[in-house]
Amino acid sequence: MVTLTINGEDHELDVPEQMPLLWALRDVVKLTGTKFGCGMAQCGACTVHLDGEAVRSCVTPVAQAQGRAITTLEAIGDDPTGASV
Image (cartoon, rainbow, N blue to C red; front, top):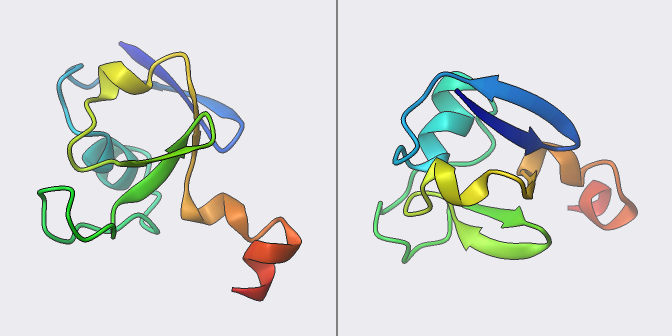
């Protein structure tokens, strides 16, 4: 069992720790704003923030995200900059 803090909420997930964060977000938590693009951390479609730092979720294992604040596209609409985008 893995606990991830996503957009300020804790989620307990029954996923392997080596699973890419992208698939945990999309397939398990059902937050589909983060997209699959190239799968090689080149295009940026899968970018999320971990503790405010941009990372490519397609190559970031779930284990690396434990204990850190994950911010996805779904959460940025709550601030003035995100709302304008």
